[in-house]
Image 1 (cartoon, rainbow, N blue to C red):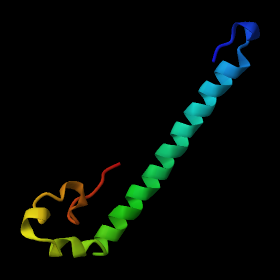
Image 2: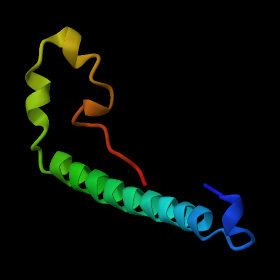
Image 3: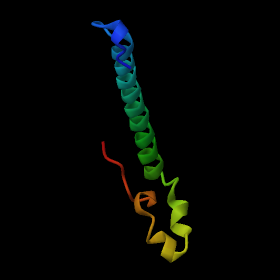
Image 4: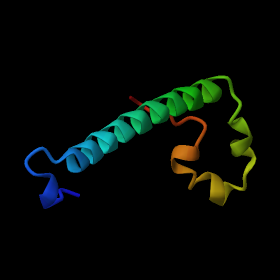
Amino acid sequence: MFVTTQAPEYPLGFGLGLGLIWLCVLSACVFLFYIRRENKLRDEGKRDYRYDLPEDERNNLGDDNPAFRFTY
């Protein structure tokens, strides 16, 4: 994206880089709010229906287990 005809300022290349950085910041913020909401739902017991699964599936829930909490 660093086109030689735009030298030495390279507005397209640096603008694209800055835009991608802001996309990462926005994605991280959205993910933070999602895991905070998910932890709250698990604290309220709204994910406890997963305990009703058959035992072989219940043993392989991983982070879907209602007792699992995301950290941040």
